[in-house]
Amino acid sequence: MFKKIRPNTYLPDFYSQIETCAKDVYFITNEGNRINLKSMMSQIFFLTTYAHTNEAGKGFIYCQNQSDYELLANYLD
Image: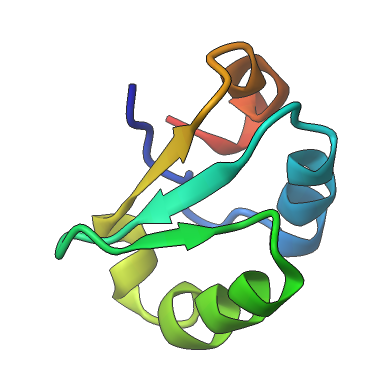
């Protein structure tokens, strides 16, 4: 299952919630690249490359553990 990040999501809260997820959470770009958002380096890359542009709205969030979507429900469409 793939979900979109809601517009105007406050990323520090989103990242904090990702840390509570049981397994990895990925941002999938339109090109198919996977950015593991549980990694601090990947979070910084995501923030500087995608979050401050319209590109974040074009990609998707994928959770390895289906129940993690419930933990991120406030941030995903």
